[in-house]
Amino acid sequence: MKKCILLIGPFPLPVGGVSVHLRRLKYRLRNEFVISCIDESPVIKEDVLNVRTLNLVAYFRQLASADLVHVHSSVPLLRFVHAALARVFLKKLVITLHSYRKQRLINRIFNFFSLRLANELIAVSDFVARDAGRVCKVIPAYISPAPEEMVLEPSWHELVCRCRAQARKIVVSNAYRLDDFHGADLYGFDQIIGVFKNKHVTDNWIAILNVSSLEGCSEKYARFQKEIADAGLTESIYLRNEKLSFCALLPYADAYVRATLTDGDALSIREALSLNVRTIASDAAQRPVGVICYPTGDVGMLTKALLDEVSDTREASVHSFEEDVIGLYKGML
Image (cartoon, rainbow, N blue to C red; front, side, top):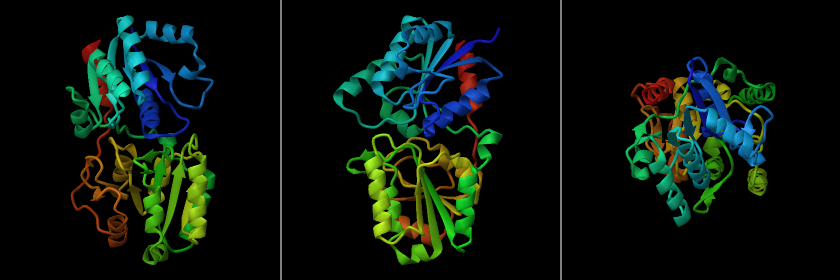
């Protein structure tokens, strides 16, 4: 009889690194285990229990029926609640840390206790493991996309064709939300807009940027749109908030930029490398072989990296890590 795995965290929609990881993990686990899910996304879906519905009966029922609980929460309070209840129900508990930023005191307290409740901790990079201050198994978050994820939506295909007709190269980037980090845009869209104020860039490149969710950041999105228009860049930067399978856009790109101010193990970086797309990223985190790194927040160096069109000559080796997770589960059950 198959064991039951309960996955807890944000599931698409909206699309973000953690939610895509969870959707792919669920898909890859389906032949080995019975899978149940609890969603933390701000978008409530009909086919999955969402914590925002406060349906405690359904929540406890799923918890009780699971053999192992795997928590992917990024919110320290939620992570602690899920962890504590899993242990109350005497369940095996795995926690994955997709990032580990500096926290307020109350969040550090929640983290302290939740991480010590876990039977196993997974960190998506050595940097995250180091910052967590506990022994972690390092398993990068990348899981290869399912075939249906590689189909580009018609509106995006039309945009790509329109850009190609201008005989300029395409650079792409994505963000879950336009969150701030120490007063600047976390995903670095402000940096990319700054890069495109250089005429050498606009003569040769077009940027396609997508934001998955505008929750709490609609004013900032409008401000970026105004900045793009005021700078005369509406034919050079296409900033959108539309449904998108980002991995399906990558094959049409000449470069991918991840300009984040802090990071874990970015799925989109490994997706770009697996598709042989030139990949430029800030040095805010440990990056895989093949990534062209520039100093975090340095618009001048980001501009240089884009215009120089150099590539990392080391061959990127992109591995899908679902078997590492499956092996961990089997060792615990």
